Structures are given as C-alpha cells and as structure tokens.
Length: 485
Image: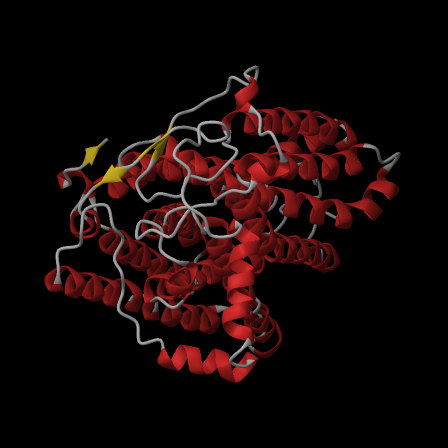
C-alpha cells in the first residue's frame, strides 16, 4: 500500500502466529514419530507434507484464490518444515568426534537459518521480475522433492542411540538387505537397558534437561518477540516511505535490511564453529546470554541506526542458540529420545513464547507504542537464564569430584525422586503411573529384549565410543583425548 498498513501487518501477524503455533505444536508428535519409526521415514513424510503445501499454492488459478489458500498452505508448510528440521540433526552421527558432531549440528542450523532468505528473494523475484507467485511455488515444490529424495538416501532407517556412536553412510538402495523386511523393523530403537542410554524417566527428572529447557525457552522468547515487534519499532523510529513508488528500495530501508540480515546468520558460522570446537558448553552459553542481553538493551535505544547492530547480533544469537541446543541434547542424552525431548522443549518454549503477545499488547496500547519497558523485562529474563550454566557446572563438577565416571557412561544424576513420584501419584493414582509409563515406553521402543548381535540389516554400522565423561563435560574439545573403536 506504499505506507505503513496496519491491516496488512495484522494479517501477516495472524498468518505468522498460525504457522508458529503449528510448527511448535507438531514437534511433539513428529518427535515421538521420529523416535519410533526412525529418521528416514519421518524425513520423507515431512518432505511430502511440505511439497503438498507448495502445490496448494501453485495450483491457485488467480490471486484471489491464492489469498484464500495462504492460511492453510502456511500451516502445512510449517508442520512439514518443523519435522524436516528435527530429523536433519541425525546426520551429526556420521561424524566420529564430539567436536565434529557439533560442527555438523552448527551447519544444519546455519543451513536452515539461511533458508529464511528464500522469502525475501522470492519477494524480489515476484515484485521486480514480474513472476507469478504460482510459478515460484511450483518451482520451489520441485526443490522440496529433490530434498525429500536426498533424505531418503542419506537418512538412516533407525536412530543411532549410543552416546558418542558413529554411523557409516550407506546409500546403496539396490541391495536387498538395505530395505526393512517388515513394518516392525522400522521401529527406531529396540535395545536392552544400558547406562549408555539414559532412561527417559531419569532424563525427565533431571536438571540437565529442564534447566536447558528453561534457558532455551528464554532465548527463543527473545528471538520470537524481536521478530514480532521489530517492524513496529523501526516504524516508530522513522523508517517509512520516502516516495510513492512502492518498488523503490528507498522505502522502508531498515525494514528491508532487517529481513535480509535475518537470513545471513550463516556468515557467523566460522566464529560459532570455533567456539563449539574449543570452548566448554558453560562458556558458550554464558557468551550467548551476554550477547542476547546486549541485543535486548540496544532495542531500547531510540536511534534507528543502532538497530543495524541489533540486526547482526540477532543473527549471531539465533545461530548460537539452536546450535548449542541441538548439540547439547544429542551429546548429553544420545538419540534414543532425541525426538521426544526436542518436542517437549519446543512445546514449552512455544507456550512460554505466547506471553510475548501480552507484552506486545501492553507496549502498543498502554505504553503507546514504546517497547523499551518490555525489552527491559526481557533483559531481566535473559539474565535469569544464566542460572542454568552456573548450576550445571556446579553439578557436573560435584559428580566428577565424587567419582570418576566409567568410560563411555553418561553422568547418572542423583535425584530425590520421592517428591516427584508422590506428585505423579497424586495426579494419576499409584496404579496408573508405572503401568502408563511402561506402556508409553513399549509404544515407543517395543517390549524390552536383548540387544541383537547383528543389526546391519536395517541399520548403518555403529562404532561405539569409549571416552571419559569428565573430559567430555569439563574440557574444551581440542584438549579431549578419546579412543574410538
């Protein structure tokens, strides 16, 4: 419309909210599906869902039909994209050392972050190249088909679940043994209990999971609140149209720059990669929190040029958050419950993120468009999240001092479960809790049975790692000595 259009912004906000809710809400279900049926099946189905969403848009006869379909198509794309993103982190197991696994996690996060450039690029092609949106969606659907085929060949049938394990890439689909002989063999994990695989019950009782979940939720809250308010902030600071030509690049320059900076986070990959390879998890999270705090405070500065620094910081913080989050869960808990744990953390972060709309309403109607106070509140939340790395380090240090953990074993936290069991018993009754938990475990992983000696029929070869957990947790990767067999 050539000027700040409140109606258009409201429509885009509604679509964005629906897509965000669909992506977050579906992660829990796709995570459970991933743990049960494995990365290959989940990734292929996710690719099919994403492609169908693009086809819905590509087959629209005209703009009016396209407008009616955009809501449903966006939800379909959000569900498919979220599941595809989750399964992509299984490729980190193709690397042997923890440092290489972290680098793989970094590049997966950077790749998906760079994908946000697609929308502004498509907008430029549509606006300046006079290419119909239906044509763009059809071409992009062909791209998603190729990505789905890639997932079919690269992703494994089953999840690697040993902490520190390595898999060998096997794309020879012409071998008969490459294919599962029955639907039962698609079950992601059927292994006996082992200390290398932390039980789900102990994980869900541990500070190492819920503390990280709280940190992740607070950082994601900042990022989502930033994306939902930055347009209003820039408009309030003077970013507006300078002429009546809606195609002029001079109009809303800072808003346009914000969109493109958001997709260039992958340029920070060398720095983040260096940190992940040489620094401990505690240092990396402290550093990320410090940058998030600076970003929050700069958003309160009423100078539009300062927001250029915020654009760059936001891209760096986002890459750090997702890279640290996904590598942490895989490294701490393995991939036995990777999908479910990611689904839970995403659901908690999404539910917490809904509070951002309350802050936004407060800033728009009570503070009359001033977002400074709300970002001071967000800054307090960011500072509070620093309790996680501090407590985590103290707990790890106390466990290491108490006993040198056996090579290859995960830290077994001492948890007083009496209050937890009492709470569950109060909610569901003493009989339901154990039977319900065991039924859920059996649904995910099948009945408990001895680990088969040869799983090469449907699984890529696994080479187990025997390494000192104390070295893994407390020392930089470059100083860790490990033996891979």
